[in-house]
Length: 176
Image: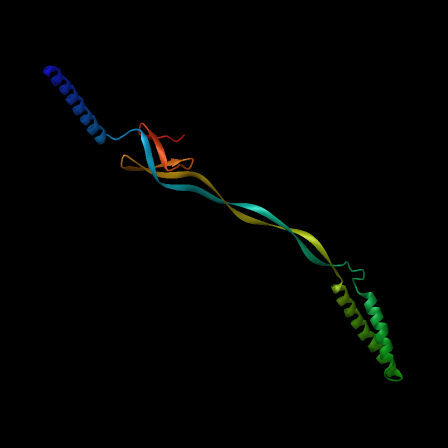
């Protein structure tokens, strides 16, 4: 019995020593699989500008077409009225000079009055006005992920944003 107990204790002792040795081996040998802790995720953003056409309806004031470009009507009416008024002054040949002067002054005044009326003769129209503006665009093209595994900090570029940890197999990050 004694020899059986010694044999059993010897086996248990050998297993214990092997276990301690394996544990020490595991402690000094870095793991090749497991989970890494994500420390930082930095998005990689591409930015650019694109032209975009912007159109809007605006009210514009336009002059109506002029039927009497040379303002003959205003000149004639002004000359007649000026001649009648000028005829009221003076006597003899002075009356004729006053009539002629009144007609000339009235013609010029009538022409200018018609000009002012034509300039104020407007209408409002709606037009489409367009211009090009530069619009800012951006797109996230990936992520620089900093993680720690086996007390070793590393950074990897990934297409998708990871969670709080990364799967490691055979020392490499599993990205799928």
